[in-house]
Amino acid sequence: MTRDYSQFMPSTGTPTPTTPKRSALEILGWQPFFATQVDVDTLSATPPVRVTEVHKSGANVKGDGFDGLIPPSLDLAVGDWLLFDEALPTHSVLLERKSLFKRRAAGHAKHYQLIAANVDTVFVVTSCNADFNVARLERFIALAFESEVAPVIVLTKADLCEDTQPFIDEAQAISDRVPVIALNAKEGDVAGALSDWSAPGQTIAFLGTSGVGKSTLVNALFGQEKAATKGIREDDARGRHTTTARQLHFTENGLGVLDTPGMRELQLADAEAGIADLFSDVVELAAQCKFNDCAHETEPGCKVRAAIEAGTLDAARLERWRKLAAEERHNTATLAERRAQQKDFGKMIKTVTKAHKGRKGRR
Ligand SMILES: Nc1nc2c(ncn2[C@@H]2O[C@H](COP(=O)(O)OP(=O)(O)O)[C@@H](O)[C@H]2O)c(=O)[nH]1
Ligand SMILES: [Mg+2]
Ligand SMILES: [Zn+2]
Image 1: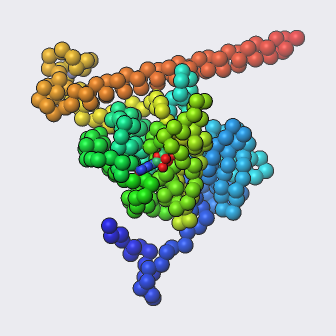
Image 2 (image 1 turned 30 degrees about the vertical axis):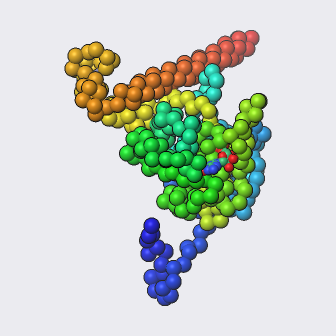
Image 3 (image 1 turned 135 degrees about the vertical axis):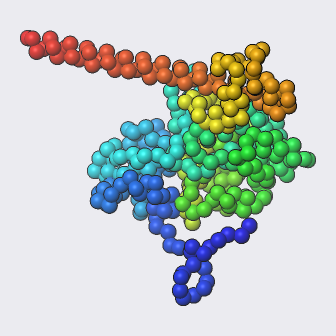
């Protein structure tokens, strides 16, 4: 593929292309979106730092000539930008996020888990083998659409598969807005295959279940071991993963790369728009049904059933949409209920405190 380097060419003088010098912040993914949120004085008083890792004991941050740890306080995600307050680190200010990945925490938990912030492209990784699952890919893609991060599907282990075409075809049928790549993550030209989304200053992330080759892809981009890789049995009996924490690494020319532990379960919540985006064809048909509460089952004037009968809509795809949309509504309601309970509890505490003060006042 040919690229246009004209913007990087000196307008006069030598005709050889020069690499523009990037600032330390640009290498960490500093973009105009963040710069426009701050004025120069604030920047010099509280320099921007990027969160590269989040632990229970705090967050690792990197800035221009700075590499440190801030104590846990804010609800931070890997990839966040903070205006770092050196005197009072916990008072550092979180900049508005360009994008945020979150999911309903695993199990029966009623809260969100922040996955990553300020990612530009997400590679949804699966393999050309039994891991390949359209419904699971759709969840990741809907999450990406909801988070306003551009998704790309990566099919690994092409070298171990006799015919990759059926996998590519099925992946391509998910959405015409999502490019699909099939490769050998171990020995293929990974950097070349991902180059369209890997310009300096960009941040990319790899999502997918365990064992599909996320860490292998990360290492291939760096040409060295950045992330630990292991066989498919990387989940041991205690459910540990090789990649234990989400880590944001930076290549020399300024590509931010995020490896994540495998995600077996991805529960969507507050992702109605993302799902509607991915299934926009179904949503549009449903809007034309005769009854606006049409369940697309036996109702007369149902455009969804008509499309299935005409062969223009896949019945299995409709079922996946129904299931994902129903699950999302349930999760969103559960989390909203929990927020309401917390609010009530908050009110109760305030009321109690007031009553207490009131009593004191009367004394
Ligand atoms: N042959 C082959 N092996 C791969 C490929 N991608 C990953 N692997 C192997 O699959 C295993 C799991 O890879 P890893 O990167 O740890 O997966 P992760 O859990 O998604 O990070 C490792 O043994 C890799 O060497 C590929 O495209 N071809
Ligand atoms: Mg890994
Ligand atoms: Zn209908």
